[in-house]
Image (cartoon, rainbow, N blue to C red; front, top):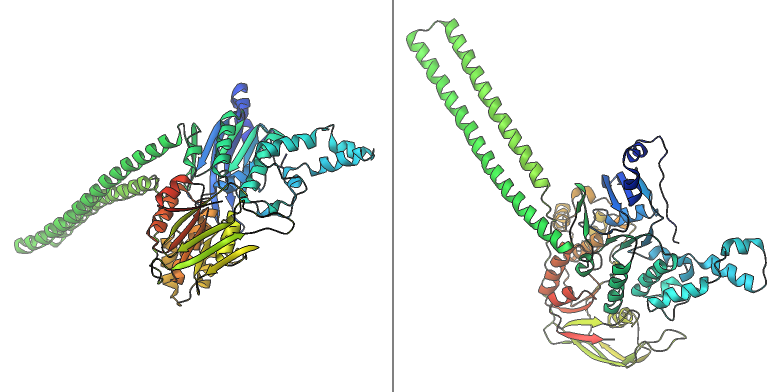
Length: 560
C-alpha cells in the first residue's frame, strides 16, 4: 500500500482521555478522528487552524471549500504525506490517497507508484532460482502479486500498461487510473481522493462512479464534479472559520448555504439599519445636551446664580452627558460586533474580476490548417486511426474530445508549433499569439513569489499599487503576496495565470484550455466559464466537464 502515517497519541494525553470517556462502541465506529489540527507553511502562513472532526466507519463524505482553503493539504496530512503543525489524528486503518498532482512520481515506475516493485522483483528472483531468505521476507507468500496487479490495471482499462513503465510517460487520465487500480490491489478500508475525475474521460468517470457506489469502506473525496459530489450523503465544508459538517447531499448543501446566506445578509442589513439609527440617536443626544448646557450657562448668568452652584450644575450635566454617551457607545459597539460576526458567517466566496479585450485578428481568418496529419513517438505506431484534417479560423470555438491516451495533448502541441507531425502538414498563421492554459500551469514559476510572478508579466511598467489592485481582483490578499508559487493550490495557480495575462494586457489570438476546471472550485468555474464565453478570439477547449463545455457554447468538435 502507498505509505501513510498513523499518528497515535500517548495514553496519558488529553485526546486519549477524551476518547476513553466515550462508549467503547462509539470509539470503534469512528474511522477517522481529528482533533485541533493546524497546518502552517514554513514561511509562517497559516493554511488552516484548530479543525476537529470525525468520520464514521464506512461513511462516504465529500470535502468542499474555496480554492486555497487547505483541502489538498488536509488530505495529504491524513495520508501521512506531510506532517501537521499541531493536532492529533487517529485512524481505523492506514489511509490510501489518490492525489491531485503527480509530479513527485514522474521519476518512478508504475510498479513503484503502486508499491509492488519490491515484491515483483523478489518473486522473479525466486522463480529464477534465488532462494535467499530476504526474497521470501519481501514477498510474504504473495505468490499471485503479478496476476493481481494485472487484474487491477485491466479493470481500469490499462491493458497495455506494465509495472516497468515510466510513470511520466502516461497521460493524466492513465496516471489517475494507476492510483485507482491501487485501491483494488491493496483493498484499503479508508480511501482519500483529491479531484479523481480531473483527467478521466466520460467512460472512465462512469466506471469511477460505479466503483464509489459499491465501495464498502470509508471515503473522503475532494471534487468539483457535481455528479460525483451528489453521490455522498455528508458534506464537510472547510473554510477559514473551521470545519463544518452538513448531513445532506451536495445539491441540498448548496441550497442550504444559499438560504443561510440570504438569511444572514438580511440579518446584517437589519443590524446596519439599527446601527445607523443608534448613531443618529447618539449624535442628536449629544447635540441636545450641548444646547441644554449652553442654555443653562446663559440662564445662570442672567439670574446671578452663585459660582459654586453653577459648578454643581455643570458637573451634573457633564455626568448626565457622559452616562448617556456611555450607554449609546455600548449599543453602537455591540451592534458593530454583531454585524462583524454575522458577516463572517456568510459563506460567500469572492469571485474573480476578469475581462479580455478583443484580439486584433479579423473573424474568419485561417489560423491553423492541417492536412492528413498523424504523430508517432519513437518505436510506436501513429496515435490516430485516421489522419486528421481540419481548419481553425479566428473566432472558432472548438471542443477536443477523446478517450484517455488518445493524443489530445500531443495535438495541442502540434497546433502550438511545439511538435511537427510525423505525417502530413500544418499551416500556422504568422505571428500567431497563443496562450496555453495547461494542467501543469506552465505560466507559473514555482521558484518565485506571487508578487515576483506578477512583475515578470508587468510589460507596461504598471506602478506597484496598480499591480496590487489586480492581485486583489483575483482574490489574492496582501497577506499572500509573498507566498511562494510552489505552495499554491491548483485553483490559485489558475487564478494567478489569468491575472498574469491581464497584467500583460496582451490579448491572445487563441486560447487553448486543457482541462481548465480541474482544480477550480465551483464558484470560480462559473467565473472562468463567463470569462471564456465573453472572449471573442479562437478558443480550443479540452474538457470532460460536460456542464462547463455547454456553458462555453462550443460549436465545433475535433474527435480523436
